[in-house]
Structures are given as C-alpha cells and as structure tokens.
Amino acid sequence: MVNMWTQAIDPDFCFWTNLAVRKIISNGVYLGMAISNRFKVTEPGTGKTAPRPKDEWIIVPDAHVPLVSESDFKKAQLILPKKKYNGEPAHIFGSKVRCPACGHAMTRYTRQNPRFKCGTAKYTDHYGCREHSVLQSDLEKTVLASIKAYAAAAVDREELMLAALSRGESEKAELAERIRTEENAVRLLEESVAKNFTALVSGKLTRDAFVSKKRVITATVTQKNAELKALRERLHDITVGKENIELGIAELRPMLTIDGLSRELVDMMIDKILVHGENDVEIVWAARFAADLGT
Ligand SMILES: [Zn+2]
Image 1 (spheres, rainbow, N blue to C red):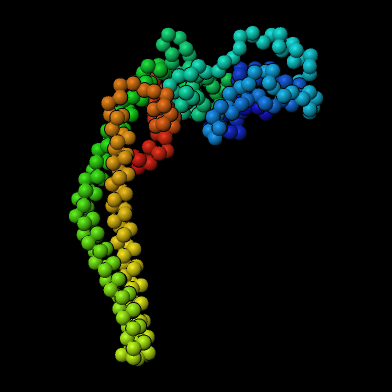
Image 2 (image 1 turned 60 degrees about the horizontal axis):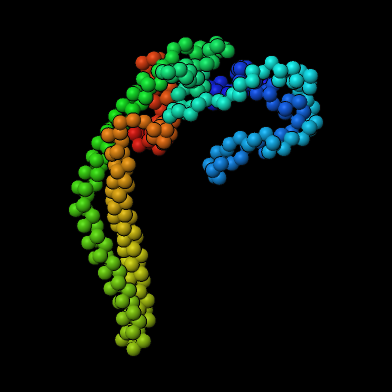
C-alpha cells in the first residue's frame, strides 16, 4: 500500500490522495524501471536535496516486475493534466501548520489572502478532521505575539536566575580564597616530605619515623586534593552558569521588539502549529526552546 503522506498520526491507516495517484501514474518505477540519480545534494551534511533534470536520471528498464502495464501507463500520460505540479509554494510556515486530528500539514490555498485548511477530510473521515480554516495573516499575528510573549517570559526568568547568581558573587570570591589557602597547604605538605627525606638521609630521622610521617602527610594531601576538586567545580559552575544565562538573554532580547516573522525565526523556534479552530491555535516550540520554558 502506498501512503504518500508523512508524519501521519496513525501510520497503519493509509488513504489515496490526488498527489499519491499522480505520482504513481507518472513514475516509470511502476512500469518496472529502476531509476536513480533523480536528486542531487544541495547542502552536504544537511540532507537537503533538489531534483535533477530528467536527462540526468539513470534509468534501467525491466529491472523488476511491472505493477502497471505499458499501455495503461501511456493512457494515463494522455489524460494527466499538462500543468506541472510544483508542490507547495514557499512561505514562512513551510509545512509547520498542522491539523491536530490527522497530523498532516494543512493545505495552503493561495488566493490574495491565503488560508490553511486540512485537506485530509475530502479523502477520509478516519481521523475526524474538521473543516475549519485559518487565514495566514491571522496565524502570523498570533505566532508573532506568542514569540514575543515567550521571549518576554524567558528573559524575565533568565534575569531572575542571573540575579540569584550575582548574589553568589561574594561566594565566588570566598571560593577563590579557600582554593588559594588549600593549594598553599598542599604545597607546604609536599615540601615537608622532601625535608623529612633530607632528615632521614642525614640520620636525624629514623626510617620508621619517616614512613609514619609520610603516611600521615600522604593521607592529608589526598583529602585536601579532593576538597580542592569540589571547590574548583563549584567555582566553575557559578562562572559558566552566568555566562550561559547572559548568552541566552542576548539571544532572546532581540525577539522582544521584532515587528514581523521570518522563515528562519519560525524554523528556529517552532516545531509545529496545531490549528484546533479558527481562533484556537497551539504552538509547539522547538525542543531547545521547550526545554528553556521547562515544559
Ligand atoms: Zn486533518
């Protein structure tokens, strides 16, 4: 069974769409051909591709058992509309506007004032998709307002955390002082081992006395090094935590004053936009930002 849709809520349920049928009756693979080299990589490492012109395709006829006879295929080519299907025109929301019932990207009807509507209902009532539609201009206003509100809340929260860390500034100075004291103590202990060794060699210290002193000193140094490690980690956390928050605020602050959406901004911040009703839109933030909100 062929299901041309992706990200369906129920992957076991398939249905035919105009696009799925069109792809089959215009694709030589169903005639038994093997076709490769149809796409080229446009940005290596990103998985982004673009179609190649047909004369660059590598076509191997009779590579497998055909599903469609050649005469049926030729008849289909005659009745296929001549207009090329170019897919959805590019717009700032891409395929992020989705129907919450079936999970599919809503179809964008391009007239002077484009609107989004779920196209699944005309093929199946399996998901109980609703017929409502939403204007792109309304959606843009809602999303812009949500991004600003999100940024304002996030900046407030980060500034509170920054203030808490700034109150830790005195702790930072205290930690640095304790680290210096402990480092000095360790150095003195290590020096005393060398002095005891000199005393042992010159006969001022017995071997037993040297060994027992050394054991005590080694144990103390080990303990002090463990304390030092903990102190340095705490100091590092305070310093780095503050830098990260400052970076986060610097990234969020420009969003407080944006006056329009861009494809980049929508791509970066939003995973999907679920249209429950004409005036009921749910924004699902991209994972990084959702984590930011603690949701
Ligand atoms: Zn739907």
